[in-house]
Image (cartoon, rainbow, N blue to C red; front, side):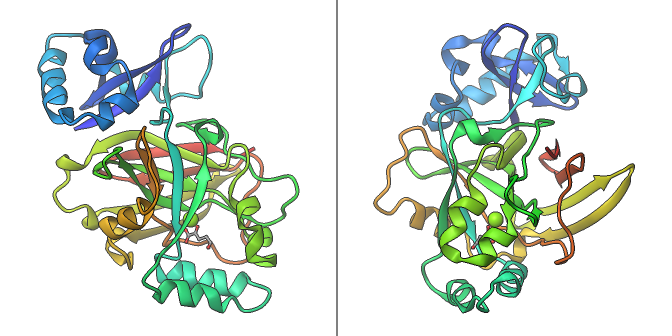
Amino acid sequence: MKLCHFRYPGSGPTIGLVKGDHVYNLGAISPERFGSLSELLCSQDLHERMNWGLRQAESTAGIAYADLDIPPQEGRAHLLAPIAAQEVWAAGVTYLRSREARMEESQDGGSFYDRVYRAERPELFFKATPNRVVGPNGFIRIRGDSRWNVPEPELALVINAQGQLVAFTIGNDMSSRDIEGENPLYLPQAKVYRGCCALGPVLLLSSSIPDPRSLTIQIVIKRDEGVCFEGTTGIARMKRGFEELISFLFREQEFPEGVILLTGTGIVPPDDFTLHHGDVVEMTVPEIGTLRNPVL
Ligand code: DO4
Ligand code: MG
């Protein structure tokens, strides 16, 4: 079962049920059950509510998904990032490819990346507040003071306040590789800035996917009507488990609204690649959809 977050002109965010190529407005069907994304995701009766919503949706008219998957604009209904008040965190160096790329970019060889890849404790870092996150078709940004920038396609875990994995989405962990490579203490500047993260296009409930490690993630970067980079990896190549990452994240932390955790990238473009203004980044997990964002 898939959920989305969208907005009608002049109104606040609302929750939609995505079924086939249509979206059903659960927020309008029952504001009590579907009034707030954080409350819904943290509720212990999420699945009962969703099944109820599914039955009601059958007797209401849907909106074509394609009509919502458009650049955000005031006058038209459009998808929003599937986030409310949650913080976004990220795991790093969870794939061999990320360890290699980081060691190559580091000015001093970056042996700490190898150590963290093998250590019991994973790398977890704060990635974004909701205002730094863009949704489907929103502009992701590259820093003006950086000359080497890449998108990072990552499976994102949506976790409730009790530490339970409730849904998946796609996350783009935008990174400034020259800033990160110059000094590891610059990581927050390489990772956290306005427009540094994209999420979406929808949430796939974890109960709908029996074997999430069989998922694949693909990236295509388009430039001047062509494709300038593409890559695919399988989530099974990730060195760490979802529960392992969640249990470290919840050590000595509370997330009353739940939290979103990006699980690290297994795809890094070659070292001579950097994003340009005007590129379009598409990330696809077939079971979730395609998160498409232009670059500013
Ligand atoms: O250690 C730096 C960041 C790692 C990261 O973002 C990743 O592996 O995806
Ligand atoms: Mg990353």
